Length: 160
Image (cartoon, rainbow, N blue to C red):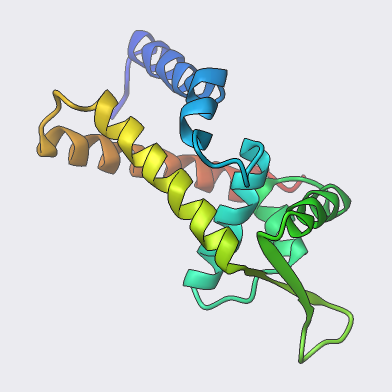
């Protein structure tokens, strides 16, 4: 099935607009409103990464966080250490490999992450207030399908 160039161009523009919208200062301010423990979106991304790995039963490490955030390990290490200094994460030595460390959310980290998640959910609810549940489910399914396509391309061409 061939999609027209005009349709692909429209889709490309909407994807870029969404990407930019999620990086705007207003969006960031709303998500972090009332969450002084998390000074920036970078810290929030680190906390979410650790949370996702823990939820999957994987012991998060700086290397896993770096891979998920698509940054160098040294960059991730400095950012993680800053989050640790704020008391939102702890770092412990891996029981199986003394050279590795494992990251864990502290109670303060869990609490701050919950606040930011509530803010993000409230913002999304506001944006989609006049949408039906079916429209939200359809967009979610289509975005998941689009992201699977991007993941496929990344797996095929990303590590070159």
